[in-house]
Amino acid sequence: MAKIALAQFESIINDVGANKDKMVSMIRRAAIEKADIIVFPELFSTGYNLDLIGDGIYDMAEDSSGPVISAACAEAALAKIYVVAPVAYKDGGAIYNSAVVIDDRGRVVNVYHKNNLWDKEQKYFGYGGHDYRVYKTPFARFGVIICYDVDFPETSRALAKAGAQIIFVPAAWAVTHRSLWDIFLPARALENTVFIAGVNRTGTEGEEIYFGDSKVFDPTGTLAAKAGEWKEGLLVCDLDIKTIEKIREDFPYLRELRRDYP
Image (tube, rainbow, N blue to C red; front, side, top):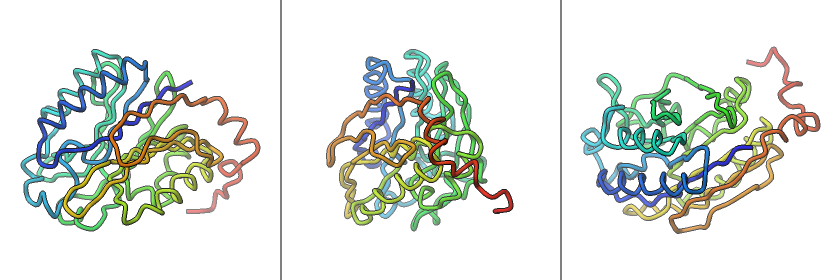
């Protein structure tokens, strides 16, 4: 059994310090709930609207020694919880829209750079290198993609083929494309027979409105849990990982996938 916590987060744009403090509070809440892992939304530490942030995103980007990731590592070690912290990440001379994966000993085990960049992201961020990593933990094998990545079936399929049982999708999904949130998440869950957990932002940044509605779909594409809409909160739920084997007997998509497909 895996207990996951999805942090439906309302970021304060351009205020890394305030967002860091709120992150710490939510990690501690997840620890009280005895969650195995907590996942935050896309670019939660800076805000998302690049029309408003502009070149300031370069100044707020950080590497693994930065203030947000350092605090997340300290809290992960203290609470013995995995943390997925999506931030603007400095790597060499570029910055990326990334998800930093931290284990329950407070160590950064990988940094996933978003592969499919949406709109203004292409101006500021570098593209990821198709590093679809699966993390083996005592509670489950999980992978991470970011927001627009989920629109492309190849991303989730790569993680499923590599053994993922849960795929987390941190997002800053605006209300203008809300209908797609309820199409892509269950579709990716069913076609790969995995749990999909979408972790969305809430709040308003200029003309961008984020509706929340973080949710989890089981390996049949059925809704398993959901957070509220339009408000911040922490969604904690148990996932019975053992059900995947039985579901894959009834829905053998991965087993019967033709090996001559690209």
